[in-house]
Amino acid sequence: MLEARSAIRILHAYKPPLADRIGLRLDFNESTAGCSPRVLARLRSLDAELLARYPEREPVEKEAASFLGLDPSQVLLTNGVDEAIHLLCSTYLDPGDEALIAVPTFAMYSIFAQAEGASVVEVAAGDNFAFPASDLLARVSSRTRLIAVANPNNPTGAAVAGDVLLRIAQAAPQAAVLVDEAYFEFHGETVIDPAFGDCATQIENLFVARTFSKAYGLAGLRIGILAGVARQMANVRRVASPYNVNAAALAVLPEALADQEYVRGYVAQVRNNRENLQRELGCLGLHYWPSHANFVLVRIGPAHAEFVRALRDRGILVRDRHTDPGCEGCVRLTVGSDAHMQILIDALREVVPLLGLQTGWRSELPNGVRS
Image (cartoon, rainbow, N blue to C red):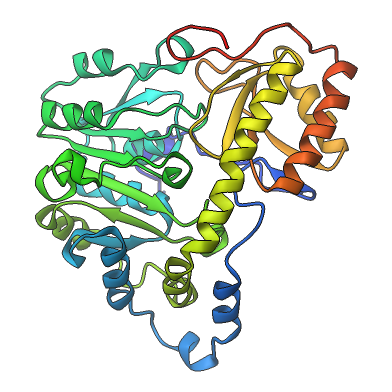
């Protein structure tokens, strides 16, 4: 009788609640404005001949590398950041190795590591979800072969200073250190920065992932970037399919990269609306954590599921994060365009008093000072 590997049989599958997503989508951190009009125009121009042939990744990879200020040998286009994580795990993890992650965070780090037979070592975030740098460094051992850090982190919105990330990479030279910058545009800080000594070309074990699912509004096309030193990226390419990114995504990516005015405009709206939403949450007496991403994590308490249902009844989808480590009673709210945020705020003003959620709490900053 055919059976899956033991590592797969015990794996806890990630099942995002994607069904029946009818309404204002503030649950998966997608763009609420959609992609650039230039992207749509390019999609409409695609012909049968383009779709009939296998996609050619390398020419677009060169454009993406140029956009990042890197050499093409340092860059691999991937089927979203998910594939980038999967490829790193396949390249560097053997059964019995260890992967270090600070929790709560994106679930796929753990899932892909465990699928390779590695053990996942979870390090709990500090007070107010502060990044546990010292605790994580203390858990590094000779078995540590992967360290994954989302910056900014999902679902908390917390960010890590670049010098801390470089210190982690230097402290664990035997491990692939992934800095997942899926929400980079809303944060504005990256380790691909001359201020850090051009670390993407100099630190052998450091990898950076980006996605076009968030700020660029291309979640449905599944396209991301993995960057690292050329020698290590050559290893990753050995396990990557040459046709991993579809032809439609490759056709529109140059247009998406070229239309930075559109991206900057949407990001500016999100950043402004993030502050407006956090201010409104404070006025409503809800406990939230200041975010560097396009979402805000809010502690609702025991009524978290009722809160999600009440907003859904009003046509607004938000994400219950109650089961994430340290996130008991928490709900994540995606931040979007001006019009969409006004709809959310109007609904919050109705739902919060209706459910009796006013607590008098305010946000708590990483140093524990209340705002």
